[in-house]
Amino acid sequence: MAAPAHPLLDRAVVAQIEGAASAHLGRPWVSLGFTDLSARSSHPSGVLHGQPYSVFAKLGAGADAREQFTAELDGLRLLSRAAGIRTPVPVAHGVIGFAAGALLLFEALPERPPQARQRADWRSIGQVLAALHGVRHPRFGLAGARGFFGPLPQDNRPVPANRWPGFYLERRLAPTLRTAVGSGHLPADLAAGVERVAARLPALGGPEPRPSLLHGDAQQNNFISTADGAVAIDPAPYFGHPEIDLAQVDFFRPVPANLLAAYAEAAPLDPGFAGRRELWRLPTYLAVIAVDGPSPLGQECLTRLGDAVRRYG
View (tube, rainbow, N blue to C red):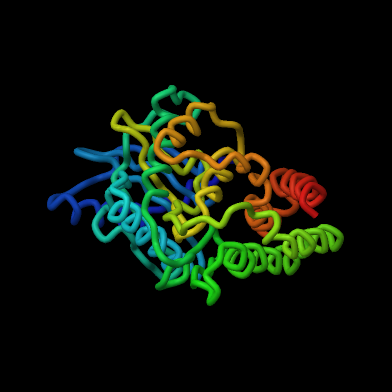
């Protein structure tokens, strides 16, 4: 039996992409080939090849798709405007909404794939993170429309006390714990363990940080390595603790030491960060468990969450 066609190759979808790319270019643009990148994304995604540029496309289904992609595009604009870092160029308006979902479109970037990154590529990611964290704000959070962490809505509203442990609990840990419990994928004993850790946050969180601009989902695949340095993609930005991003960057697999070394040249690390890394990963574990609990990654996150709860609870 033939494998099902990639959803981005549906005729109606290709027509939408070609229309947007033509408007962006100011003359007709046609797709001449396709590379599937879905393995590196939580959505069907890929590059439609053409001239004089190719188009990266991501397809979202459901009622939240347009809002989610608009939040992603707004987040990239914030990172670029506030910190001067490189982000992809949107094609036309960047987001196309339709009855069943939405498309997110960027000019594709020639990249060095993650498995082929060199020392300078890892250093560039560290430098981009340092540039972001150098942008400060008086309050934790971010005003405006709600954000998203992967497919999950993310409440970025500041909290009245404007202290990091309170923001982290009210806007990150408690909501993802409720979502994970509601999914039915989180055992009751682990949920109780997370609640014990939550009660100890003021003692566990280290020195009170200044609110810094965060990428918000800074795992290493959310940076594209180009000849001109790292380009940030897939952000979930807000103003928070810089250690959140640093805990995310090696969430899925280790990174070379020169990434943090490059970061530390501009923004010295607190000596206690290594001991807090797992504390800042708790919402990500809970989010993965909620969305992908039965999968191998979900089961791995259950194990890692249990280890963290024993460590901090």
